[in-house]
Image (cartoon, rainbow over all chains, first blue to last red; front, side, top):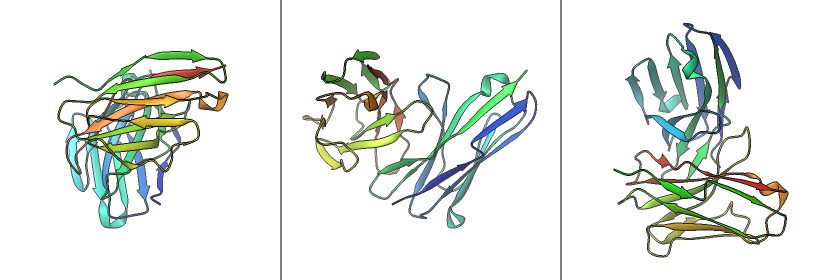
Amino acid sequence: GQQVQQSPASLVLQEGENAELQCNFSSTATRLQWFYQHPGGRLVSLFYNPSGTKHTGRLTSTTVTNERRSSLHISSSQTTDSGTYFCALSSNTNKVVFGTGTRLQVLP
Amino acid sequence: EAGVTQSPRYAVLQEGQAVSFWCDPISGHDTLYWYQQPRDQGPQLLVYFRDEAVIDNSQLPSDRFSAVRPKGTNSTLKIQSAKQGDTATYLCASRRDWGVEQYFGPGTRLTVL
């Protein structure tokens, strides 16, 4: 079945630093979505990005489908960015597999 | 549009008790998912529906878990005889068409003592 690996598993930044989160997957027949989850909170969709580059605010997602990877770049991090970031892959039958997540902590 | 809603938000059970979780997806969303998210882990798909039909329930512990979506709208996930290992947050999500993004409800946090 589909394998999804995220790295790093955890990351600690000082406020203002940039972050690069990686998602690698085993199949090209997938569609990718990035989520954010505050501890104890709802999963919030950041990007639906099956291919190419998308921007919103300080966030940029780049998916290179034929290389089976996606990245999430956070620029000028803020303490409110702290939480866990997940990538999730949907197959052509809409079955979804989540990665293990990257836990981000941004210190003031 | 209203988001995905779930109830209850919290449940605390003794082992062996039964519990049901309810999900109301976004109107018009034909695909509905149930996930289990243990503490400090990513969501793990249990079952998903297209309208009222189960598409994949291979990850559902079928001896104790069941899920239905009889009219292709709301859905219920039931645990017949809860175990401590079932302690987790149960998430519902929906999506409108093939390939577009999915939206999550707030989840039901289950604790089995």
